[in-house]
Image (tube, rainbow, N blue to C red; front, top):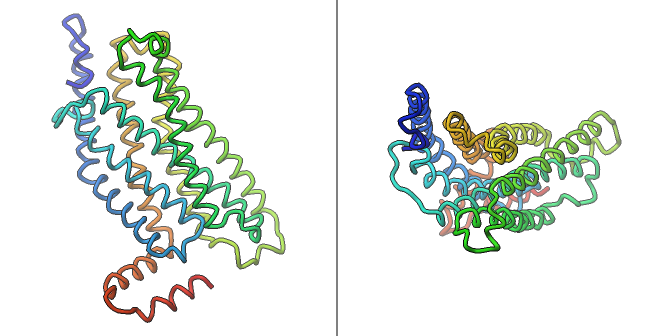
Length: 333
């Protein structure tokens, strides 16, 4: 059960008990996530997508990025119960999945992580563009929708290179082409660099530019085209939360990339601690699927108005709603 199966009669009882304790803690954390975080994340992600798509006229550039992250969060919501109810995460597992299912889950997880990280990154850069050049419409809703489409396409293409390494790592070595590519450390290195290092550098660069803009006083500061000031707080909170929740997972990829090749982690003494930390880091990554929509719900002051309009529209969908047209016009102006 869990990673404790690697122990044999030559291992110390202390290490075995430590492994059992790790397994129990991980089982409890997985159960808490499935009972509390999973339903909250599923409901709020669906609500975030439905509310914004039903009010397309009033959507802003940040709304488009948060919808994009919510869709990626829904993909994580599909992956989470399958993984958390397996023997990797819990003692009371419901099923075991084969290599094909493992690779499918890994692809969906990697694509979602890339979409979330790059949506956060481009939100920071577009926020700077909107602050610096509010009348250029470079960060308009129309352009942002196309950018989000490219994010999903880029995430799929980026995951393909890692997919080759993972697939070849799980199939027979008789295939000459794959026998040369059975290197999971290379796949982790690709994900670490593209999925974390590049977005981290870009976000840091965007924040430097934003701070420089905020220190400068220009005639455009009173421009009505600027974003709502609350968006700045939402941007800071979203970037901090995303990197706090995803950094541990990418650090485990870094450890596996650096220390996995020499065989350091292959030592049975370090396996329980490493796999425990890796599973906990993945739980934190799954937590981003409910932390982000909750934060958006609390910090976006327009969300409540959009939700009320959606409820009124559903209530009077069989008859005309005279107040809906005027409300939308007020938001646009």
